[in-house]
Amino acid sequence: GENVEQHPSTLSVQEGDSAVIKCTYSDSASNYFPWYKQELGKGPQLIIDIRSNVGEKKDQRIAVTLNKTAKHFSLHITETQPEDSAVYFCAASKRSGGGADGLTFGKGTHLIIQP
Amino acid sequence: NAGVMQNPRHLVRRRGQEARLRCSPMKGHSHVYWYRQLPEEGLKFMVYLQKENIIDESGMPKERFSAEFPKEGPSILRIQQVVRGDSAAYFCASSPSRSQETQYFGPGTRLLVL
Image (tube, rainbow over all chains, first blue to last red; front, side):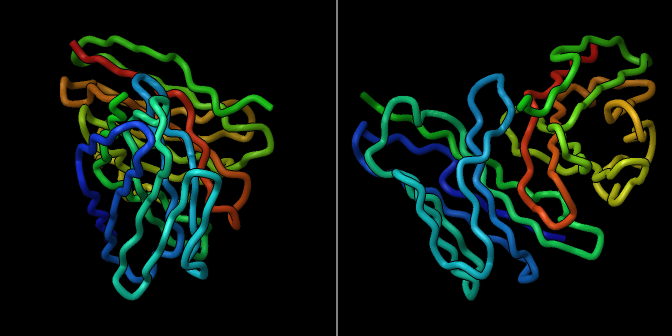
């Protein structure tokens, strides 16, 4: 089955600096890669996703890149703000005949924005 | 448009009791996924259901766990004879159709087994 590795487990950056979180996946058939933000006591919130036919996607301060050859994808947050502090999860899935599979998640990155 | 609803938000059970967790998907969504999150870990897929059908239960423990998504009403995750190791946050997510991979998560149910 799919295995998703995520690094680092904790990331501390100064407010205004950029943050980068990296993930690798094992199943070359995976074709959908979402990123979720989870705040304490809440459910995961989708912040951006990318499909395997695209190499990069951007939404304001957030961007995701995908390297299918290396089976690697990354989340980039620019101009970080205190409200960006949370746990971020990457995930992967593939669409099969019955619909999209369940997501396989990384173990999460605790992002801390230092004021 | 209301999001994914889960109840209860917190559930306390003693060992051996049954736990029932409910999930109402977003309006118009007919696909439901259940995940379990242990402390300091990522979410683990458990089961994928459409209305009245289990599509993929590869992540479900073989015993004591079951899930359903009836034609009417919420999806139910049922845990029989709970043990302390079942203590976790259980999240459901929904998506609108078989062609849409995007999953929207509910707030979760935190189960504590005493």
